Image (cartoon, rainbow, N blue to C red):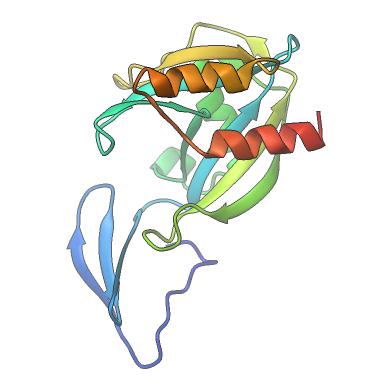
Length: 184
């Protein structure tokens, strides 16, 4: 479990209700929540090309039953090879796997709970700079990721069109746009 997250309720033990390969369901007091057993959080990559395009990904998400538009992202520390991985290293790895872009540098600009009523996971928004394209992306292990480079001028209309077409748009994109506006 993430060293920063210590679930507590006065006098209440932490119970494990179910343990799967990727998620553990816990109960403490009257509350149930999930955690990832081999993770220190998730990274979400804010990548802007030299042409002022935000790099986004589209993929089918089983919990939503639909394709979703998201920032490139991934789990931190969920394998033996990445056990002690920093959010910035995970972000650079995920960016290359999912989008084919390599970044020169990465900096965490925001860390916050992912969904504090449902999971102990922390989200790390990582701003990368100095992009170069190595390949077309698409992910690993059958992820079936479509890469979009969306001009920042007109991105609101582009996102609205995706929503109108029945895709979900992850709210972290709005947080990324806010952070980009503060530090272009």
